Image (cartoon, rainbow over all chains, first blue to last red; front, side, top):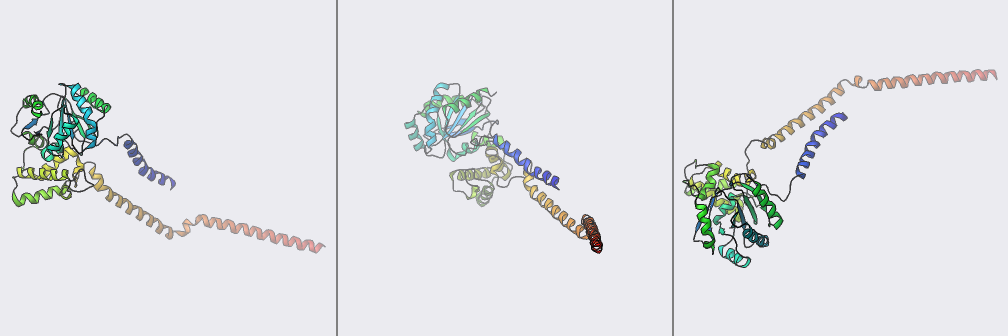
Length: 174
Length: 187
């Protein structure tokens, strides 16, 4: 009888323990994204003055960084200087594109006037691009390799250290 | 300012192979292909939009459907659902598209495949296991009342031992008694 209790108890407890240890290996801050490793969606955006439409094809053979932000988002302001610095140091090697999410073009322009503008920023009417990339909130930054695949994604404000790590992974990708 | 920055970018980007679909739709087409249904309009479109939105989980809400949430993300998803239905995409295509960006989590009614089988099957398995356990216990209880003399074997032998012991004691006390009387007889 005791042995049976041991076997049944083990059958219940051991899988739970296994799940527990698998869970320990996860970074809780990392939000799962089905896009990692998949071709980055191409999309159309409008310029902040609303006059131009721009199509962005991610299969153009150059690594890209997509940064989703909003003027009402404090962490976005926090990371903006890091992005400006990155845009200056990376220059032509990487395309850096800002995408304004759930905001008005006026507020976005005011934000850029204050925080500085070093890379092209576009408006995402209807949040279509945000949906295509599975954006939950701002800021979120996607790193797209030269082959047009999403290499990594960063949720929350981007520190200099985190940016360097993502860039390293992006450049190591095929 | 913006156009100054975008001009080289545009030139760079527009040199991409063009397909029939506009880029805004290419993301959808890349995942689910061409529309499979006839384009919807009017009341039919309204109804189907509502029904599909009820099957979609709003990613930023606490377990609410896109149909029930006033958040801007839910409104955006609902608007895109409507547009796709109007273009002739069917329900499954639209769900699959949102799933491609947010994962299966976005489906409020996940399909019955893979690990999901576990979710559906485990209550049934647990029920059967529980029923078996109860049946087993009941059956054992029954058999115990049936062959009581057999299961009380240990008890019987114990009783027998106890009886033997007490009879031994009785004999010894009897002997002692007789001895005493004997001694008494002597004195």
